[in-house]
Image 1: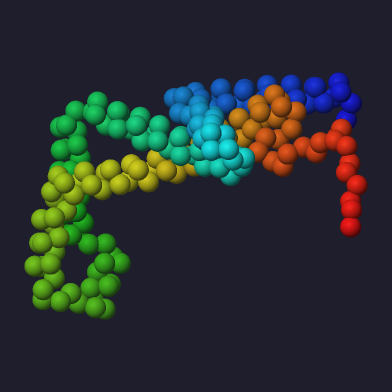
Image 2 (image 1 turned 180 degrees about the horizontal axis):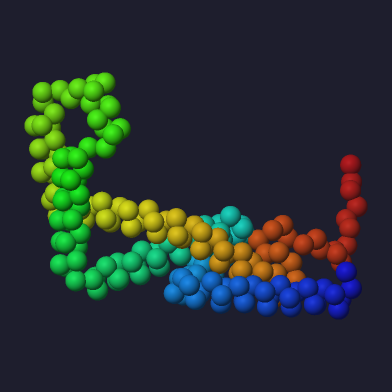
Length: 194
């Protein structure tokens, strides 16, 4: 590749990476920008420890940083929702559970005919309902579901942000970062003695 072509490819890679990162920042409310910050943090930690950083390490940094920012953003958004909204959601879930129990689906009726419930089933169901209807259970399930969702979000958006940052780095360095060191060309060869 000629110098002019190499320069054009590098410029195109950098512009494409920056454009895609800016494009991803809009629908994710800027969370995608945490990916390059996570990469830079991982690279800095590796350099402080005197180790060579890897692409996998920088990808993990991008994904974890994006997921953490998503968790923080979700927590901030949840704090802004009025408490009565969550109480209404919890009450509506209890009403829906009761409605499903009083009007079982066709599949549930077939299963009950095949394997009738035990005599202890109403007692077990009452204990289960008393646990499920508590605010602590509702909040526990909500928090766990939010963390899992942020993990998926972080993996998808962080991977995209990592790829964009790698394009920008290729444009800046002229080689893919995190790979093997480029060969040294002007090093004198030493004779091998046997």
